[in-house]
Every structure is written in structure tokens, then in C-alpha cells.
Image (cartoon, rainbow, N blue to C red; front, side, top):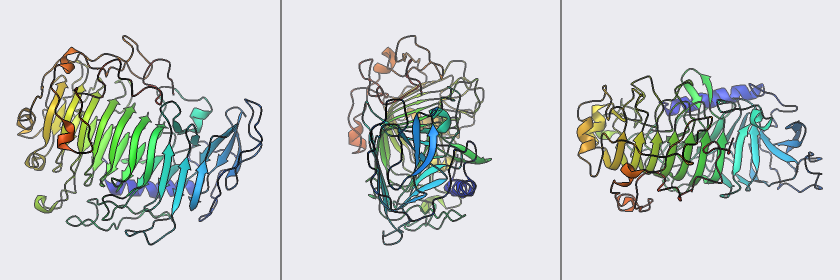
Length: 499
């Protein structure tokens, strides 16, 4: 479990790494462009012969040479983007980030400071990074509009992937994406969270939070984030996607995080809502929430790395405000999810339960399925603090099929918290099926389509619980084999769709 301070420390390390170039694979000409540039919209060059690189780069971007065996021209974004920058599909071109590439300069709680940046990315664009010091940061008051389509996603990946040097076990090859917003979060003023005091050192000032629950950091739709997450130091990692104080005005839909070396998605406070998530191969948790997140997520597939690989924490790890704050005045996290399917690994460590709730998290879990192999020693649920029992977490129409429903280390009241809900199954037998019956892919044998036992569970009307949710006549992320919302824009989740 990370705290916001870890993200801040990670950001400082990102800048330190950026100062000397990428930490792992350096590409020709990578470096700091300086701050405050205002690039123009890219222009379209003369179309090169298929399989050959573009002759130049769009105005405002830097030509850093060739990649992918000399077939693509790498065009690097400025270190700081102010004004508007658009990335379009361009023959023979791929885009690059180096160091902590920032969209805008922090504009403060009320939006009057700094300089705004707006980054727009068109369907089909690919952006790569070369090392752990490389990350894309959208600062508070700025926005990103990265909107792919169901058949033409936007791909953020590593240089190694572009060069054909990755496989199903690759991970941690660049930092990831960070969206910083002005919505409340609990790492500032706990009883009235309207100002943040944490900053990233080393010349990169990233502030999180404010008093605008509806704040918008832009839109991410139909995107892949591959091979991200980076361990800056022990316990300090960057995730595939980090949301820090992101508001409900932010659109986050159809997002895949593949083979992150830490969490898939981690949320620090804010009120952002998410839908249609695929998190496969994360080395730690699938969805990790902290410091007062009060949003929701619906339709999510989380599949863990197999036991033969390192790491692989939990499906959900949810915390609240720091426990040094008295419970009565704590700005509690109120995470809400519906229609998730969590497929656990063959865990050898009992502590790696599929759900861990602690520090007073007031959780709501609806219409979801949690399962792991019968040989796994991990349970489905671990409520780890008495404060969390006090918050009365809600479980409705939830199906457990684990070697044990509750962790042995769970606090008193854990089983009662689950069984007091409606339509819950504590000790079920999973009948989930794979996307293609009997298909095994290199990352994991994936099964997330409802079978007879899951179909038998009566769902709750999720919309009546949280207005962002839509009602479904089924539990879990995927109703049946005809429900293929996860296809066309993802990779590594069915045979033949390699990343």
C-alpha cells in the first residue's frame, strides 16, 4: 500500500533521474528541452514509403532519431507543455517522452496560478518512454484529451516494446501516467481538505487536491498503458496510472494497464469515476485506493500475475485517511465498485487476500466476483482494522470462490460484515470460463466470463446505490461470451492479442 507521500517521493526521484537522462535505455538526443515552451499543432510531412521513417518531426517536437529497426522517426515532446499540443497519427512517426514530461505548470487551488497546458492525442497514436525516470504528468489545472476508439486505441509503452524486446514477463520499463487534480483528498487538511502542502522536490512541483470535487483533468478513453511502473527505491514506486485529487469531471473509460511493476491503478483522494478497466499482470495490487477517494468504478477485469513470477499482491487494496487522525474527524475514503471480476493467482502467501480494507475505509462492493485457484492459500477478504468495521462496509450480490472466504488475520466482525449483506456467497465454487474456451495465453490462463454459479446470483440495481453506475441483469465484469467489451482495444487478454 502506498501513501501520497510515496508518490511525491517518487516524483522527486523521477526528476532526479530525468536530470541525467533515462535510467535504463537512452535514445539519441534525449534530454531536457527546458520549461515553458508553447508547441504548435504537428504538421503532416510528405508521406514516406511504408516501412520507412518520416523525414522530420512536427513543429515544437524534437527529432531524436530512429527506433523500431530504423522504421520509425522518434519525435520527443517538450519537457513542459504550455498552451495546446496535439499528437496525430503521422506516417513513419512515433512520439516519445523523456524525464518527467509535464503538461502545464501547477495552477493552484483556484486555477489562477501557473500556466495551463492541454495535450490532445488522436486515436492510434503511440507514445513511448525509455526508462524509469520517464513519466507523463498532467499538472493541476491542466488537461489531457487522449481518446482512442474501440478498434484503434492509444498506446503508451516502453522503448523496449517498440523495439520488439518485451515478452509476457516484462515490466517496469518506464514510469507511467499521473493526473493531478483539484478535488478533495485527505493528505492535506483532514477535516476540510481544501489545500495541499506536499510538493515534489528537484524542481518539479506537483500539487494535489483542493476544494473542487467536479474538477476535470480531461479525458482518457480507449488507452493502453504497457510495461509501466518503476521502483525508485524500496517502497516507492510509480504505478501504471496514478490519480491524485482527480475530480468527477475527468472522464476515465476503457483503460488497460498491462504488466505494471507495481499497482495497476492507484487513486489518492478525489472524486473521479472510472469504467471499463482491464488490469492484467500487475506485480502488486490491481486497484489501490487511498487518502479519501470518493468515486466509483464499474466494469473491471483484474487478473493477477501467476505464482511463478515475483510479486502479485491483491486485487483491491483500499485505505483511508492517516490513522493518526481520530476516526471521528477522519476524511474517510468511500470507494464504490460494481461489476468487477477479480481472478487471483496461486498465492503462496496468506496475506495476499484478494480484498484488503483498512484504516476506516467505507467501502461499497456490488455485483462482483472474486476467485483464485483452489491451491492458493490466500482468502478473498481481509478487513484489517476495527475502524473499518465501524465504517460498515457494504457488500451486495458478491460472489466469493476462494480457498477461504476470510483471512485468518482479519479483525473480528469481518465475516459478519460480508454475510449481513444481501445476495452474497461466501464459499462458492467458480464456474468462470476463459475468453476462448480452453485457451491459455503466456501471461496467464484467463477466466472471467460468468458460468452457471455466478449467473445464479441475483444482482442489485447498482444505479440505485450510486448514480454513476448503470443497472445490469448480471454480476461480474462480463455477462457471457457475447459480451466482448474488452476486445478490440486491449492486448494480452486473449490468445493472439499480444502486447
